[in-house]
Length: 158
Image 1 (cartoon, one colour):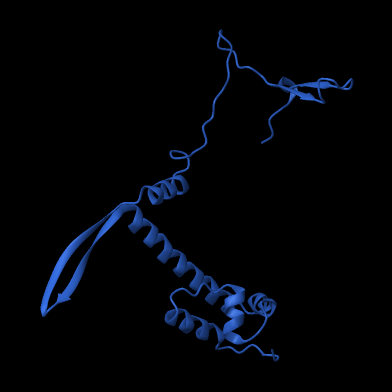
Image 2 (image 1 turned 45 degrees about the horizontal axis):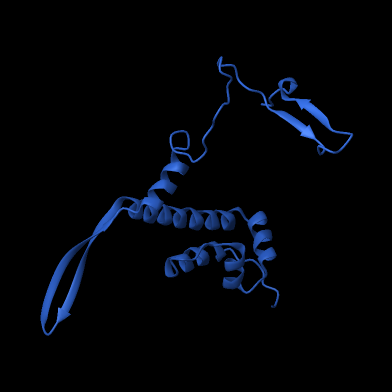
């Protein structure tokens, strides 16, 4: 690849390219392919030219919005009209795509993790309701150097 010098119209070229290619994510590798340079050159341009960095961030932001909207549509379900042309007759049928449970779960666990998460917290207690503190044993049963660590002495870190 030959040496390509940065030009002030590069941000607009990227924006235009993103309009033509809806799947363009503006990663350094993809931008490098557009301009015929190495990805490292794109990263340098991003550091040296705020308008170039902004164009890449804008493209990424809008692509993320498209993906979010597609995920939401998949999670909630949607309707579409199917058009068939058979022997001169056109039929239009409204079809329903039901919500996708996996997309719903993904959306909820990421958007409201305090209410929707896979992690289950359990506390072990004695018959009297006192919490059981685990013991950590270092070594093996046949090892003479086995040590026990009382976890009640461990202070939780913030």
